[in-house]
Length: 331
Image (cartoon, one colour):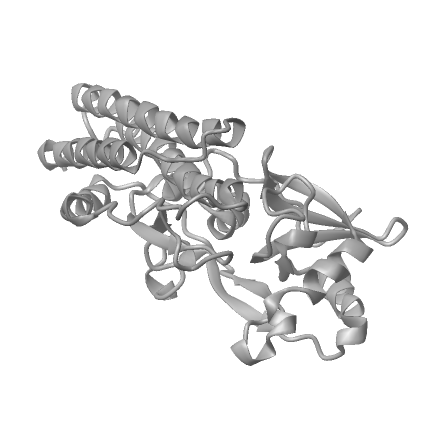
C-alpha cells in the first residue's frame, strides 16, 4: 500500500465521520489537538435522515466547523478544504490515484453508503451520501486505504477499486450534479501548527451557552415512528446514529473533565463531582440506546415515546446541572 499520509484513526470517542477524520489528521500533525476534540463546543440538534426527512431524531453537532471555518478549533491545523470536480468521469480513478500517489494528498471522496462498507448499517439497506477519507492505494491489488466507521468503530478499511467506483458513481454528487456537491476534497494544512492549549475559560463559556440551550431543547416529535412499517428497523438504525453520537459525547465530556483535572485547570474535588454527574448521564444514554437495540430483536414494534422523552429530558437536566458546576471553577 502506498500512502499519501499514514494515519492512525482517532478513536478516543465517536463524534461523526467528518470530525473523527479531522481529528485523525490534526492529532497526527500535532498531538496536543486531542485535547481540542474534548472541548464542549457542541449543541443538541434535530436531524432528518435521508430515508425520510420528516422523521426527526436528536443528535449533537459541533459548532462552527461547517458554517464558520475561521472560528473552528481545527482551522489552525487545516487551513481549508479544496473542492474537486473530476474532469473525466469515465476515468476519474486516474485523477484520484494521481492525487494520492503523485501529489501525496489526502482525498475526501463522496460515496453512497449503500454500496460502500459491508459492516456499515446502511450497507444494502438504504442510500445515504457521505464523504470518506482515502489516504492510500495499492497498484498491484487495486485496493484503496479508507478511513471510515462501521459497526466495529472508526478504522482503516481496504476497499476494492470496483466497489469504490460503484459507490462514487451512485453518490448524489454524481447522480444529482445540480446540487453542486463536490466530487471530493483535498486538504491544505498550516505550515507551522501551534500546539493546542486547553482552557477552563473556553470550557466555561461553552458551559454557560449549553446551560441555556439545554433548558430550551425539546424532544417533542422526535423518534416518532408512524404506525407499523416494514422499515421499522431502518428508523431504529437512524435513531441509533444520533443516540450513539450523544452517548459518545458524554464519553468525550469525561475525557474533558479528567484533562482539566490533570492540567490543573480545575481542582480535584470539583472534578470528581463533575465525573460522578457525567457517569450518571453516560449510564442514562446507554439505557436509552439499549431500548432501541432491544426493539430490533423484539416482535413488539412500538416505542413508548412518553417514557423515552421523559428519560431524555431528565438526562439533559442532569447535564445542565453538571455544566453549571464550572461557574465555581478557578480561572
